[in-house]
Length: 76
Image (tube, rainbow, N blue to C red; front, side, top):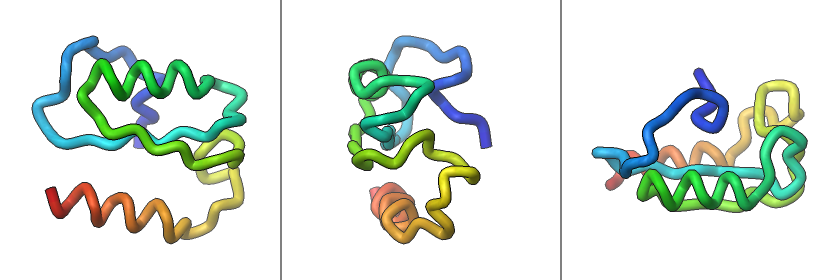
């Protein structure tokens, strides 16, 4: 899965519901950047707290909170 913050994207709103989840201490992108991208895309922004870079190596395991966000998005 490609991280949306790391790929080239348009600055317009997405034509589908979306959620941007970011960590307050991600070394690759700050909260301000994540919030700005969410606003530009018309996405809901979720601050996951201090979790480092959100990826498979961050030790989140199955990450129940992330699964709940996917369920929330699917319900839209």
